[in-house]
Image 1 (cartoon, rainbow, N blue to C red):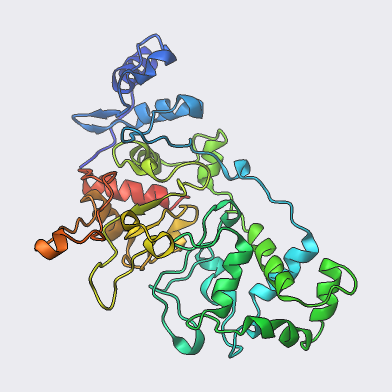
Image 2: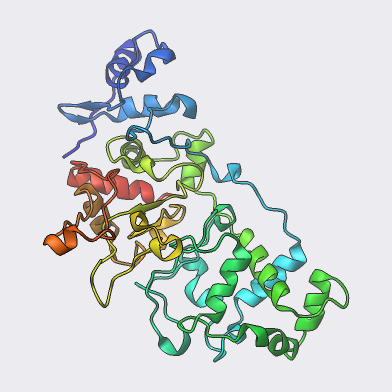
Length: 379
């Protein structure tokens, strides 16, 4: 367990910080790499020590604990995320389309049905629910900061938001629309033709490419909201309480979260196998990235999601396997699932998935997991 200990003052605090973060008492920042920052004492975590460590500029914060060969972008506030140039009239049209169930075959499912602003533009269901109540196979990804995501969907099968928008529109388990018929359907609805003309030019008309462009441009405006974490990053170092600050420190160090979650959106935009593909299960198997690339090494790999707004976007993982954040963090603490071949046939199976070696047991205490959860709730 951890306990926060009372802080020291004056030169005593400087000496304590030097011992715990690997700095000489004189404050030579160049020596900061000598050891890792822990600010831990036999009595527990020292809150004053952590405060001093994170009072420094971000470039001088404790270095993240990363596996050999892994580089992580430094944390950054929302203000560092590029704002895509989007015509307001096109984005407004896209927002209307995003909320309109008439884009679906049965006029019952809209984009917002699964991508709710209240849930970081994800939803609260294990897997998506679409046309005629059909259940999808995967959890709905959130859309905050999606303009910066290079490969979309859990398996990365779309490279642009326009391409991504078409997928749910015509998928039989989602909106089940006949894409080629959508322009005529919308053109017959109220003032849509006039709004398309206002967005794309007089006489432009309603076309499928313009529908997709409008939907994509609206999604490009979905930046994460500014939180206390951003305020902290911008220099107000009292914006996080002691528990949240410890969670930030654990995220960077002992919990090794920055191995995959870094930068302003807290994602490496890569694909990793967390041991959750249910390989061999007739009902639950999901081969992930392999379905796109056909490469055996991609079986069970899924895109690292960004963590902005993560507390509102559960259940978590590609299959919504974790309804409680503490349960998910406990699995990470255990090193995640590591399926192993049970017989000669499985051992010879070239597609048998291998859990990422980046994962390992973390030895976090239950109180440290709560601190980590508290930090994630601020994002």
